[in-house]
Length: 73
Image (tube, rainbow, N blue to C red; front, side):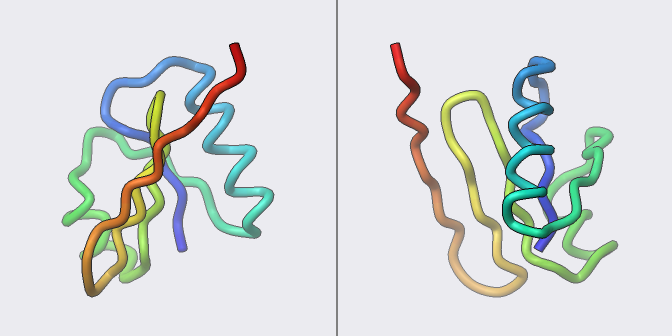
């Protein structure tokens, strides 16, 4: 599985994605405005997309899963 960020993100989102990739033992990749479909074609792996308020899992095959982040106040 690869970890990347949503389209337009803050530095903190990139930091979170890098941290998550380490925790999962996965590879972080810069998205460079590529679609998830294009990333699937290029890498042939599931893609975990880290956004500001949620994480989205795009399996190579099957349904997409969304996880809402609950952030401390």
